[in-house]
Length: 438
Figure 1 (cartoon, helix red, strand yellow):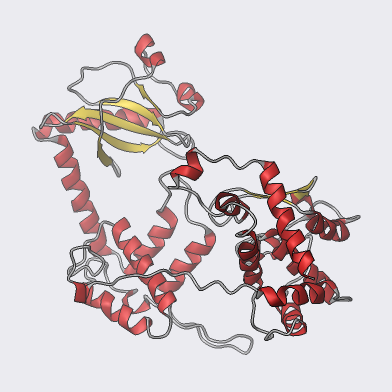
Figure 2 (tube, helix red, strand yellow; figure 1 turned 60 degrees about the horizontal axis):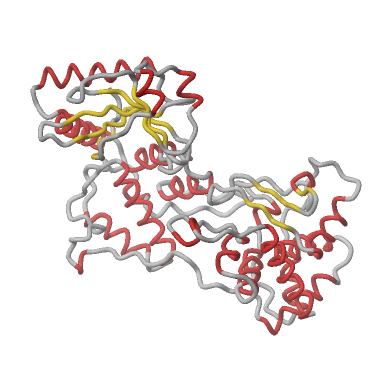
């Protein structure tokens, strides 16, 4: 029957259309359903037998759900698959519903308990057969977010796979890469991993890099949970003894923006560059003025470089950013001047800042501003933007400008509306402040 998700819920209400028509669902009807959240029944059947529904989530995600009453009288729903493109077809969903009815009649047991027992047995059997490296590969390819069914970003996939990768041999052109932090367990069955194994890796890795060690433990915990593996002496469990428990702190670094007293000198040095370094310097100034991630401007192995056509009428748009949302930047006058200078006479598909690496130029600018050459990285320019904007705009405007997620924040999600006028004023205020310092 495939993977099923069992949940308890209040009695679902069929849609008015399904209730009035008492008619079977159709593929076209399912494709045309739009949010808000709703339930749509496939015809009519008695309340005490399994019945097929299509459930629509606020995000637009649709799932086939079989509703039934368990042996204890509790109303339960079993998600049997995703509906729509890339998911399960209506005929297959109906066939799975029939199987559930037959299984309930044949077993004479609580169907929910039977399915849960089968799922646990399947997970255990699968866990015994795969190694941690294989489990990580399955996780990065199969993991999706519940709210929108989007998979992991390419950068996250690469990070997780790198944790179970072996060391690479040195060559004439590059340095050897170390083995991933979880590599000592990469070839171990995930059902054989113990709490002591995990704690041994934690103790060894946190000495060299506590931040990377915490990230590796977060990955380990996520993969084990996704596969349903409960390891003996689980160091991540809430009821684990204090001396055996792994407590993961924040993986964030301490912000290192350009100091306020050096900001004016830095801006003057970046603005005064000429010749070959001017292109890179303007790209760095653009990052500082917009607060964008360097990879979203210059491009990297996970992001395409910013193109001339991405900017129209003072509005810059980048899709599917780090947090899977669309970023819109309303350019300040200073940022628009930089764009105009480099976009003039060029095609929309042209890269706006065609450079490979701006770090050499950044080191020269840092030094000219009286700072240590390696004192600040391109990403520190984004931190500088955030530090300046924090005193000029509201926290909700700042989150929007920096493309940070607001999920879980009730105030930001349901009560505060940040319109374009506020955002435009925010980016302009930051640009004017930087220019005033110089």
